[in-house]
Image 1 (tube, rainbow, N blue to C red):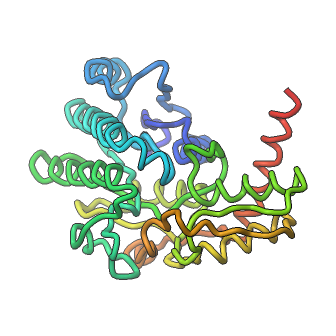
Image 2 (image 1 turned 90 degrees about the horizontal axis):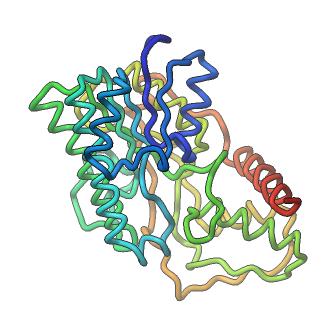
Length: 314
């Protein structure tokens, strides 16, 4: 990427999009195109067409999506499928029509089969049924990466697709209806300590395993790949190391200073049994993440405490 490139970050106000914007600015990229949902509804094809005609971005980083945890996915599967298909179809198609030089589609590790072989290699896509609790979101992301692949094959579109593991960190959502597992747990235990609650309930059995990458590392990996990767096949990003939810809960409880009882609600779904990425292709290109999980959790706890205190003082 050149410092003068006009770069559109779709979804710049979200956790990943905002991390990408912070990193771009830190690296001296100032010609950024940013538009929030109130200014541009990416589900509106005409609005997206007009936006591209006016803004003329040269590079597009697609971090926009309707996201949420297990409960949100279970309650609103139609919206998760429709909204995400509409958003990505409009942005990918207009990027192609307007002659965007490089396009980066950002997906999710939930694209892999529920019983996927571990660690999950890129070639394991579509080798088995998806996890039912987030199937609609996964289907949209699979369609998106395939759309980029097919536009590249048929039209020579300069698109790549990047699949991150579970992300967490700065600007994450702590809303119980939308948050992912790590942020949800941080909120539970920080709130419990603050309110002197001696019992915290956690969903599932704790046996599921997840891989976590701080969003700042993910942003670094994405910009690295935009400069160093130009293949039709999508590529995984992450650590290639996972942790059980039970051990994650213990770690967060320890870092927050929580000493009470932990109740496991085994009637709730664990979701996919294990999600650990094979990141050998990423490592072979010369990139590896830096922020260790313990350090990232500590940082997230501090950020949530500051946010909660600010909200309390308003």
